[in-house]
Each structure stands twice: as C-alpha cells, then as structure tokens.
Length: 627
Image 1 (tube, rainbow, N blue to C red):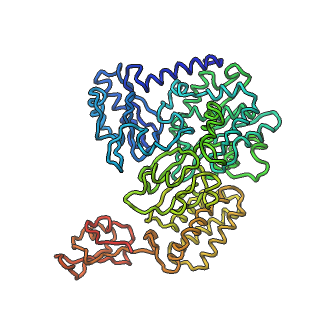
Image 2: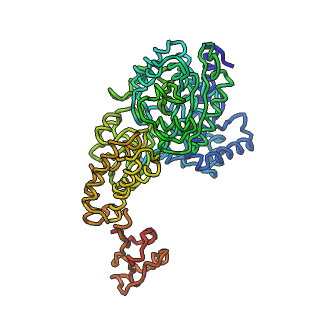
Image 3: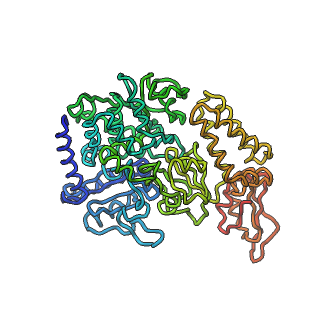
C-alpha cells in the first residue's frame, strides 16, 4: 500500500530505475516487447508472443530474456511490431514463422535480422531504430505518453513511467490553483468541441459543495477513429490519473468511464489498472494521506454514435435511452443524476497528468496561440503510413500527409482529406499548407473533431463520400428532433438520387438548402454537424455533383449506376479469363480478332453487368476499362 507522498516517491524512483535498466540493459537482460494494440493483436501478435515465450523456455534463455507486451506503436500499416531492448532494434511485419530466426540470430547470435527491418521508401536504406523512421520524427507524445514502451497491465511499469506524479503534485495545491494550471496550459477538449478544459472545470467548481461527478467519454464512434481506444489500451493509468486530478479540482469523489463495449481489450486493461490502483491505495479513501477520496466506475456503451454527445452519454449512464438533453442547464450545473458534472474525453484526460507533472508552460510550448499542446490523429484511407499519430498543434496538413503519412499509394494524386469524421469536412490540395488547429480548420469548412483523418485520392468520388457519411448519420440519429431525424433522411434520398443519375439541378439546390436547415435547427451537435460533409464537398467539388446530374457520369468511376465496364477490343487477347470469372454471364465472344492477336475479343453486355469488377481485376492485359 502506498499511503504517503514519500512512499509514492520511493516507489516511483524504484520502478523508474527498473524501467530504465530494462531500456538501457543495465539489468544484464534482453527484453522482447510486442505490440499489444488491437490492430497487431488481430494480426496474431498474441500468438507471436506465445511463440517467443515457448522458444525462450525451450532454449534455456529464461534468465537472459523476458517477453512482454506493450501498447500501440502507432505505425499500424507496418505491424505486428517486435522491439528488442536494450539495442532498441525494431522489427516490423513479424509473423509467427519469423520467431525462430529472431531468437537464433538476434537473441542468441547477437546479429540483426536485416530482412525484418523497416526500409525507407525514399533512400531504400534499412532502419533499425524507431526514432529514425520518418513516421515518428515529427511526433511528440503527450497524450500517448508511455504507450508502446510500458506493459499496460503492469502497474509498476506505469509508476516507473511517471504515473500519479501529477496527482501527487495536484493534491499539494489548492483546488483553484489546479484549475488555474489547466487554464494556463491552454488545453482544449480533444473530443471535438474544443471547449477550454479549465473553463469547464471552473464552472463545476463554482457550483455549491455536494455530490459532483467526473465522466470520461470513451464512446469513440467516428468511422476509422481509434485514438481513445489506443490510449486506453496503451496506458490506462494516465487517463485514470487525469480523471482523479479533475475530481480533486472540482470536488468530486466519483468518476465514470463510459467506454463502448466494442473495445474489450481497452475495457479489460482499464479494469486491471483500476484494481491495481485500488490495491495500492491510490484509488479509494484518504489518498496519499489527504482528505481526498475517489472511486472509479466503468459503464459500457452499446455503440450508439449519438452517445458521444455528452448529455446523451449521461442519459445512457443513468440507464435511460441515449438521447441528448436541451441545454441549458449545462452538465457542469446539472449533469449526471442532476448533479454538477464534467465530461472530458479520453485524450483530454490523458493530457492532464503531463500538465500537472511538467507544468502548464511545458504543455503550452507546443502548438499555436489559440490551440496549445499536441493532437492525436488516426491517419487512414489512401495513405502509405496508416496509423496513430500525435503531432504538435500547428503542424500542416502537408507534413501530416506526406512527411509522416508517407504520401499517397501507387503514385496516385491526392484529392482530399476528411477531418472530424461524419461531423467534419473535406480539405483539398489548396489547403495542404494550412496549420492544424481548432479555429483554422473550422474557418476552412472542416473541424478538428476527435481526430479522425481519412485521406482520399483521385479514385474517390466525393458525392459517394458525402453519401457514405450521410448513411452513417441516418443510422446513428437518435430521432429526438425533427431536423435531424427527417432532414438527414431526405438528404440521403437526394444524394442517392444524384449517385443513381436520376437527379436534376433543382435537387442540388434542395440538397444545399436542406443541409443549412438541418445545421441551423438540430438539437445537438450530431445533427448540427451532420451536413458538414455535404456542404464541404459542395463547396469544393460542385463540379462532381454537376457531372452526376447533367452528364450522368461519375468522374471517379465509383457510382455503379453511372459507370460501365468495356473491353478495349484492340487490347484483348481473347483468352476468355474475364468470361470465366464473370458471375452473371455478362461477357461473351465477338467476331472481332484484334490485330496481332489470334482469338476473338470479348464484349460486355451492359444489361446483364452487375458492376462487380471481377472482369477488370482478372484481365492480365489491362484490356478492360471503367467508363
């Protein structure tokens, strides 16, 4: 049990020494660590870990080698990862059959397995150190502190990495000074709204003494987003500590984690961290000998996107249907069970220990004048380096996409990046040098959101993209207010009409008018931001909408009703592979034999064709094209 500040400091120093010995090799051992994030686990990282443990035991290396899991390394497209300490050698895309070679060549022989190293695509050189890979060079880990370096299920490693130092410092300060420190840091909500965190805490602090609550919003519902999940999987104690600091600051004694049930690994590690902190005396009554007591609870969400909205989330915790409440009163006045409550998302709370531990100035040293600190992004879509990225605010989109993301695959042309998920908008090549911050992205018709960043290339149809997000919104609308419930449905119908080639220019006008009405009249943030993908694509890609309506063509050849597959007869060798692959018998022989060829060319019956693309995928001579 850790009962005093002195005991915490002593434990922290001891655990830190052990952790540093692991990294530096001062303990005389080699340490194998494997990525234990969801992405790598789905690629058999756990089985690879078991194989390492098996071979280490079989070859008598138990006293010389340890095998551990850590949180997400971030570079998802190159996983599963294996890192060897103290040399800091990083192996990527490791398979179970590679384990024997790593054990024999590296752990026993002392030589690097060259073929498993990352290869820089520009220089073609092999890179053995994580920090020397371009993907990591411009990153700064604050919210992701210790993710990828400590075992998230090992309490001592978290303590060694600085856990509870921020809380210990806060407990020696008056509550108002803690809030002032967060205010001075410039931290704004990382869940999408961007509201100053310290101001939110101040509102709750100013309420009369009595029962108050801190709620962590872990209901991450944006398509392609995995920021909060990775933080909870990689260093859950950091988020718990942030919640406890918030609780102390406003005078709360209970905190609730609201995490979607689809995150079982994150939930399990959160439970382990809470239990270990309770056993250590760092959660419970009279923490570190003070009069501060705090309990942590977990509630699982059923996967409703609307429950990312804070008042709908509160209803769900209370056992009611997840639907937003009218505001005011705001949750800081009447929140959970009508008591003053603050709701911060996972990333926001993960930043708080850093601010208390290192000081507000250290956090504010990163970022721009109005957007301080760092931001975590889930970088995905048509990008070479898919993964989890944390960069200082003010980083440009060009740096994010090309320097960190590695550019667009297959030398395709960049077309747009969707930031903010279904609530955000598309930014184009003209915006590549725009700095990433709250106000700048909103001014350009998008938003920071929780941190999803989906890259699109020339093969993406922007009308289809808008339709995809509107389908998502229609499914996730709670139905409480008419503008969102009915307006988004009508918008989806108009978008479907456009992609089917059945719309008129009057429909385009109606779509734009309806989007503004939904935006201006919906009850909560979901409905108010639902039209953003439509409005931003209309603003930047109106010509694509017009092409669908007037020319009855999809410029990107994505919308099935407006495209067709055709055989270029002079390229066709008449091999018949496309004919055999077609599931509906839409391809047949012609009487035409192309010059220099011996067999009759094929043709596609457009009436039968279901636009599955099997013919084009199977043609070795690129004789089939989308029109």
